[in-house]
Structure formats: C-alpha cells, structure tokens
Image (cartoon, rainbow, N blue to C red; front, side, top):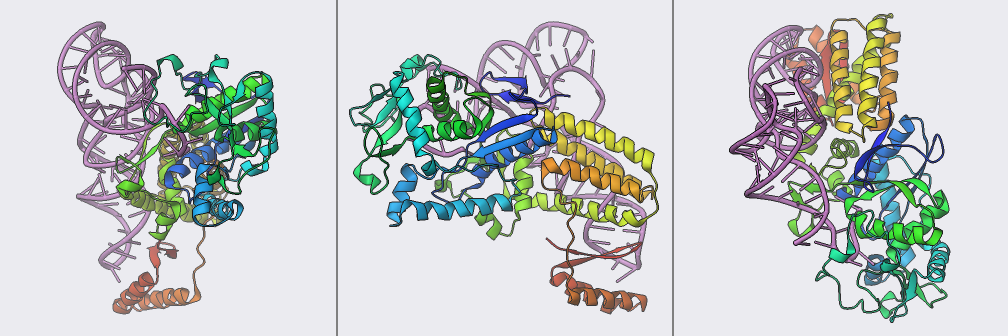
Length: 469
RNA sequence: GGCGUGGUAGCCAAGUGGUUAGGCAGGGGUCUGCAAAACCUCGGACACCGGUUCGAAUCCGGUCCACGCCUCCA
C-alpha cells in the first residue's frame, strides 16, 4: 500500500515520496490573530491535523510548522481601534487559538513561529530578491516583486497572467507598483501604521503578507521541503506568491506537494457575517456542543469537498458518539472475562486495518475509513451479543481501536465518567426498590437521576450509569 | 471573460464501468417490571437529455442548477 495525495501543483493524485526517508517537513498556513477563529478556519486546521496524524500512522516522523500571522492590515487596524499595542492585542487571540485547537483535539505542531519574530529573515530574502533583479522599490518606497521576472508565475493556480483582466478590486491606492499583479514584499510605513514598524534597508516599514511564510518555512524546514497546505482561497495569490519569491531567492524548488482544502459552507450558503451564519468555536461551545462533536462533523467529509455544516448534522454526531462510547464501555467490561474469540477477532482486526489503511492512504479518504470502523463495530457487537469475546480478545480489539484513533483523534476509548457519590447512592436505592418490586419508587429515582444528568442502563450483568451528553 | 469544483435517498456523505459504502433520522424486532440505552434488521439513490457499451450513478457530448478563485478571506 502506498500513500497518495492530490497535488494542486500537478492537479493529479501522486504517490507521496518524502525528500528524506522516513521524515516529512510540513508547513500549514495558520491563523491571522486578529479575532477568534471561526469553524471555517478550523476546517483547515482539522484537515491538517488528519494529514499530520495520517503521516505519523504511516510511519513518518513529522515536523509541522504552523505560522501565526501577528502583523498585517487587520491586526494593525483592530489593535489601533481598541487602543492597544499590537503585541497585547494579538497575544489575546494567540491564547484563544491554542485553547480552541485543544478543544478540537488537534495535535500540536512542532513549531508555531510568529511573523513579528522573523522580520530579519524576511529582510534577508527581500535583499536577495533585489540583488537578483526580481524585486524593485516602487514609487511609494515599498518593495515589490515583479512577476514578469519570474516566468513560472501561475504554476500553482494554473493562471496565465496574460489572460487576466484587472478586476474592480484592484484599488487605486496601489499606484506604487509597475504592474498591478506585482505584490508587496515590504510595505513602507504610513501614518495608519502608528508605532508598528521595523527598520530596514528601505526605511521604516513592515513585511508584506506572503514573505512571512517563505521566511519561516525556509528557516524551520529548509529551502526545499515536502508538503505545504492551506485553504483553497490561499492558493492564489498567497501560495503562488510564496513559490515565486522563495524559488527566485534560493534558485531551488520550494515545495513538492501542495494540498488545499475546500471551503465549509453553512446550510448551503457561504458563511458570512451578513448572513448571520458566522460561527466561532466558542459560539458553538456556548450553545452546548462539544469540541469532539464539532471535530467529528468537520472531519467526516473529504477535505477537497465542500462541507455543508448544519445544526441538524451537528446534533446527529451526538447519537453516533454516544453509540461509540457505549461500544467501548461494553468491550472494556469483557476484559475480565476468560479468553475467547481469538481467531475470529484477529481476522476481523486484520481485515479492518487493511480497509482503514487503504482508505486513509488514498488522499485521506476519511469517510471510507470511518465506514470501515462502523462495519467493524457492527461485527464486534454481533460477537459480543453471541458472547464470543472475552479477555485477551477484548484487549486486542481495544488496542486496535486505540491505534486507528491515532488518526481520528475522537474515539475516546478510555473515556470513563466519574460518577458522583449522591448519584451512586440513588442508583443503589433504585436497585433495592426494584428487588423489592417497588417500581413506583424505582421509577421516581430513575427520573431524579435523569434530571441530574445521568442515565441508568439495566443490563443482564448489572446496572451502568453514564453521563448524558 | 479566464481558471476550477460539485449535483448520490428526509438530511449528511463515500464510491466512479458489473459485486450491500457508511452515518443521522424513520419502520420492524430482541432485551426489559415498564422504559431508556444498546444490539439486530428493513426500506429508500445516483440533476436532466442524448451517445458509447453485453452492461453507465460511473465514460463521452449537451442542458440546467449550485458554488469557489481571478490581489492579502481557511
């Protein structure tokens, strides 16, 4: 079996081969920290998380870099509006970002470089671009990259610049450039920037947007690395510009595989503030949904497809996750039984692992991978019903689930709810009432327990208490 | 105008020439003092029109619809 990805660069499914055997350098475009991130942003981070986990599952040692853009037009504008200095403004949102990814069960990257800490590296790249004739100083004293000097420009987005008509969005204030499509490497200080500026060979100013990713990726992963990802809207111009400036500067190939995830839409419409369907993670948490439920919904669609986010869909995840929890509770209860079912179980595990792996290796086909798990769960349930699993076989099944959950990051095999003493007492009282055949009391206690957020399940082997989500 | 994606059951969502995808919701059943939960089970589908083929949801042509990007939005 082999790992395959759809490479935006070639628009084909390609077998993945890392530059250095067994190791992968992965650069994932991160947040601009001027606001709380919304679920659309998190779709990208969850996709990148699944990618990272899949690479590890396939045996690679992953070095992931995710940038934090902490200086740009929006961070400057909003920090000034709030009367805060840039650092204290952005640090609030950096903290929120890390809280949010933890809520969603996203594994931490190895590096989270901040743009403001890498200005020196950016200046070096810009200097080399000026030296090599790819960049020039415009009439407004900003430094621009001249795309006509880089014949390969458009290789990622597959755009032929000759055929482009300048849109209305090309604003009149960008008169410093020789050509409208040229992009800023260094923006000369203007009054609206306030005290946000760095000294450079071209005077006070701040970096353009694209240059930070080139500087930070090359610093941490080298001039040439394996995978670069982001949302599809970043493909052009952001990633196109990164390729141009990086390759022009080093003369080397920048990135081998470019992976882009599609947008999330809400109730069939683009998410936007004006439509009132704009959700941040904390909005949803406040509405009572869990990070696990949100993760499950968002990861369950293939990353290159539009994902239609609906509250019906989100509520549906609660049922399936509860079913999974119940499955593991049941399986763990069988650990203390005597060993049985080994051969059948080994075969089932081998078959499922094959299906799971082929699915996930096929450009991260998570839907098919999940289907293999559901089919597996159904078979194990049948075996459990038939009392054909116990001891070591149960342990093997649990270990297998722990193993595939290194990719899903959502099964929560170990989940155990600590039952409060007062609930336990009520459960005991109810059992006694039932033994006494005092069903009125038993039912009243059950209702009280339910009202306190717990659920009783009477099984052949005893009584289980689980938390109601 | 250019580049690109998609339309699969009530909803979400894989598949891409022949063999049950899967999940949620719904029906039926097992279990139960009654429930709940769980488990088993069932139905229902490939936007439309042509074509290629023994065979098309899948390939080709056309039509309709939806969506994304085309200068800083994941």
